Length: 210
Image (tube, rainbow, N blue to C red):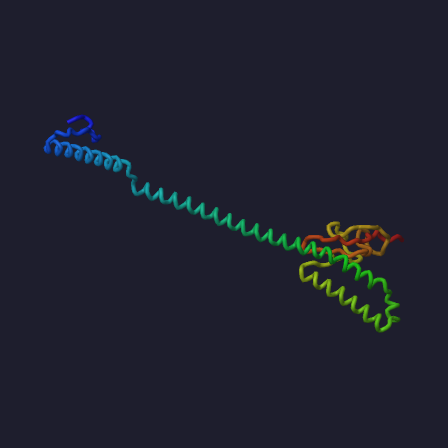
């Protein structure tokens, strides 16, 4: 029997070998295979971890899975918040552009109403009064429609504190109001939420000249 046969490797079989020789060679191969299998099982048994080690391994895996789950949930929450913020910004931007176009309409209506002094209104004909009422109703409806979408006038009444984020000073005049406050309003300002669409144009009080 050759050395290759003894180590479990394939060996050339003599075609003239008897059945007994073939059986002996097969037995040797089977014996070597069993020995190798036993050695493998023994090696695996030597490296087998204890129950405590297995429990620790499972605990570590569970903690890693938990951290991975928390990271995934955090990523999903951030994605949701980012999508909501982008949607809100897109909505505000669309309304902002549309509202900006309507502000000139509101200004023209306000100028038309201001062009007619109160004393002259009593002298208007029925047709004139109807026209004036229509302009007033249109101006009010426009302001209401803008308000439904979060667009509101900026407060700028005489005596109010001047806020450079909301008001634009175009003049400084003596007035009965404290210095640095709003003395009069030239053009209304508008905002959407916390964003200023257009600052209110005002005159700032320089205090009482006397």
